[in-house]
Amino acid sequence: MLSSAHLIWAERVNWALEQVAMSEFVDRAPHHLSFGQRRRVALATVLAMKPEILIMDEPSSNLDPASRRELADIVRSLDVTVLMVTHDLPYALELCPRSVILSGGVIVSDKSTREILNDKVLMSENRLELPIGFDPKLIP
Image 1: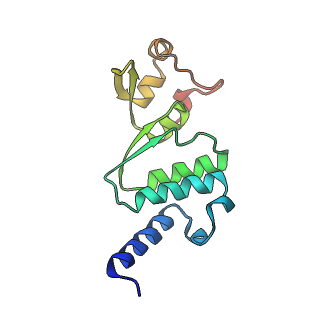
Image 2: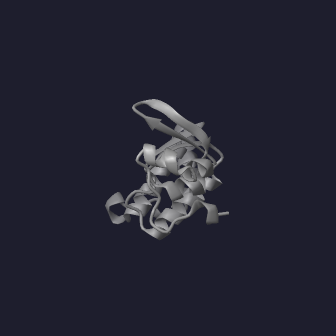
């Protein structure tokens, strides 16, 4: 018989898996999951702890476009503060209203992501580049 603490954790795990649309995979071994599915399960692992702040380091790296979109939809649906470290500037524009640029451990810019991405001098000085053909002015 499970203790009440185990039941509470089981409820949290099930809730977290629902948040990342992975409930149906609860009994599947990790090596039988795609990379994107493993990323979502990793996110569920953190969500089960009910964090106040979710820190994500390069969350879109190595994801195919569909998995990238699914993760963005999940992140937008969460009721938690998100701190994201990324060089994926279109993803930052999509998910982060505000961005901070660090250089040598010093904050060199702290303003809206859109303002940063439209500041060609700031971007160049900090070795940041947008993908070819991407214009943040065209994104609503």
